[in-house]
Amino acid sequence: MKTVITGTLLLCSQISVADVIFSDDFESGKASSLWTDLTSVAVVPLPSATGRAGSAMRFTYKGNADDTQDAFAEARFDLKAEYKKLSIKYDLFVPENYIHQKPSDRIDNNKFFRLWREKYTVGDHIGASMLSEPDGDSLLGVDYKLEPTWGISTGIDPKGNFISAADRGKWLAIRIEVEAPVSATQLGAIRIYKNDKLFVGTNKVTDVEPGEQGWRYGYLLGWANSGFRADTFLYIDNVQIEDSVSQKPKPPENTLVR
Image (tube, rainbow, N blue to C red):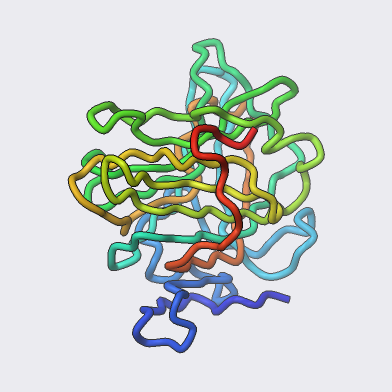
């Protein structure tokens, strides 16, 4: 049984559970007003292959026989305010036919999520990306600017088996935690948990804009540079976004979890 509140935008000052910004279980049959742009994404009844009843967001990655053709499915959101700490939780269903290939053009990074403050290409901008590994599996690495003046780097120090044979045809519990940098010496953090275990993370997110900033806008999944040879449907359910992070230990200062 789902336990999150359907399609309701909750500002912290208006609710008793102060750290919940938003939650959506899609049981209304449509996306709530938090979702500002759904590209190749629709709220649909879940098929029996997912082993779950009810509705969820379906991300449709169209297949193409040309392995240099990308695919795209993305759910954008607006939190209506900036937050210095965020926890994004949701269930992700991986279909049996999921194959993350390395195409002939060798460009295989697929977006997992993004967050930004005001404009997508300006200022603080963080996320994570998946990269291909043998047998069509996916690595996962974090995305941020290694130096404040550089462009964003993708898939930094990825860890393998984020999506593997054991994950196909199953739901994964995902939790993304981010903490904004404060200064050039007080850096920010990204931590991504898979099935309640810390999978990859860093405490080295650079301070791109002077002073402490936060995040307001973002998206889940997104552009797939690897493309897909067959139509591939991923599902996201039970989204909850909070303005706090867990008290679990962070990864060591100078390394990413491997």
